[in-house]
Length: 97
Image 1: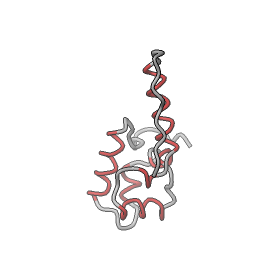
Image 2 (image 1 turned 60 degrees about the vertical axis):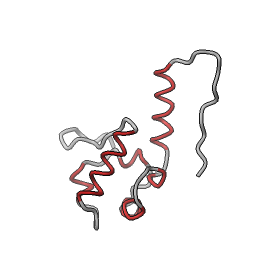
Image 3 (image 1 turned 135 degrees about the horizontal axis):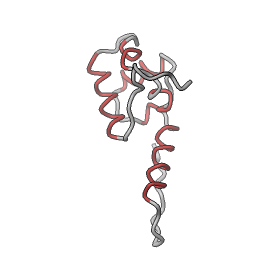
Image 4 (image 1 turned 120 degrees about the vertical axis):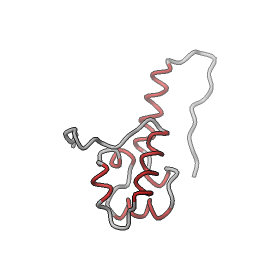
């Protein structure tokens, strides 16, 4: 898998803009690009969750209902999303769909 990195520049870039660009790229990427095991990725894809933007729209309870998903799979998803500054949708918030 090839990752596209931002070119280095001598012109100082707005760090907020750079962070937003990274987040936008991450949301558009496939769940298969996350550092998850094959079984977890397969489960997400079989449930119709193909992109990170779709994954963050789920709650923990919705992940728990995916067949063959255990608590370790859910915890790993939460951990990996957190490493990228993302999180699952809270069960208390209204869906943004």
